Amino acid sequence: MHDAVQANGQPNPFQIALAQFEAAADRLHLDEDMRQVLRAPKRELTVHFPVRMDKGGIRMFTGFRVQHNINRGPAKGGIRYDANVTLDEVKALAMWMTWKCAVVDIPFGGAKGGVVVDPKPLSLAELERLTRRYATEISVLIGPASDIPAPDVNTNAQIMAWIMDTYSMHRGYSVPAVVTGKPLAIGGSEGRNEATATGVVAVTKMAAEEMKLPIRGARVAIQGFGNAGAIAAELLHAEGARVVAVSDRQGAAYDERGLDISALLRFKSEHGTVVGFPGSQTLGVKDVLEVPCDVLIPAATEGQLTAENAGRVQARIIAEAANGPTTPEADKIFFDRGVVVIPDILANAAGVTVSYFEWVQDLQSFFWTPEEINIKLLHIMDRAYTDVARLAHDQGCDMRTAANMVAIKRVADATHLRGIYP
Image (cartoon, rainbow, N blue to C red; front, side, top):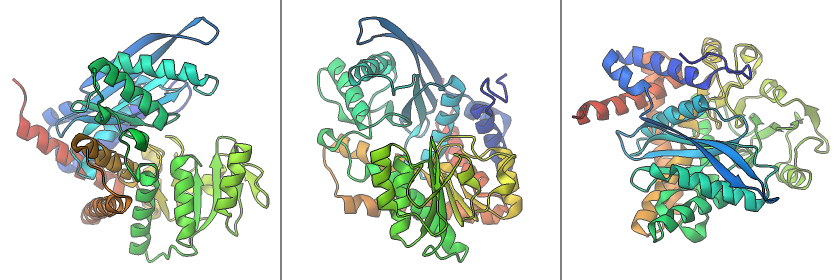
């Protein structure tokens, strides 16, 4: 049995994923046979591999690649480089990816990967050697028709380029469709960089419209000022929203009048943090979750909104740009308080949707314009949000349970139709 709490005191993410699954499965009246199939990851690969460091010594690293379910298509999911990566975390993220691909109805299953490493002290050459060796170790699983990685925490387009090149070297020809989130020059897609934030903002606007909350003038707080958080801040600022607080790993900058986002981005690139931005008040990383605001966007890591702080969150809409930021206990508190939580598997699904577009473009060697991608993306996000909101209303449940129900039913239907081999 997996512990409910990990050694670092954080809730076990796989237990959270299972609890969310069971809640939706209960409402779907899923039988125990189907639950057994859908609970368990299909494959869990753990690899231990040596990397030669710049000073000549060897250092061992541990990596994972988990495929949760591939009944609706090839496995899809990011790779993260983080000192705190665990197998249970990767399993949870792989399960969430299965539901995420199903909720937006794209033909992928869920996977996730990770290497236990703090990449910051590594030189670029060490990072490349680590990436290429990890890619070689997981090459037994990955491929354009089997499992397609993408960037995640502390990985980027350059790392995807190295993985694509490593895989291609083994094959003897270029295989751009083996990963997504690549640079444009080697088969990346327009719109991929902004995709997650574009989708988060799109569903936030849909929720705000339903609640009769004008986006113009709405106060927004964002935890996490990486790719998704920073671009969401820019997009919402452009819509006339007041971004009152943003945070990074060092702390948060708060100004109830609204932060100047372009100036804040310049400050962050010069100083490496948002802390100390002129005219702003400095807050702690978790304080950003509790500032007076209408919309809260958790865009950092999992397990941020818990039973301990949920009662103090002042937002009316929470749009999860991060994966798994809200615990089941916090979900219940929010639902009882009438706070609308747009769950991660819906709110941040635009990233994997544009990854799907990239994969399709690579397979046919024919590329679309940013305008075409945006139209296709917004159509998919609109349809998915409408499906989930309608079911939540019909069932009288929160949007996470409804999103999981939509997704799990699609995966269960595919599983049932395919049958059990042999």
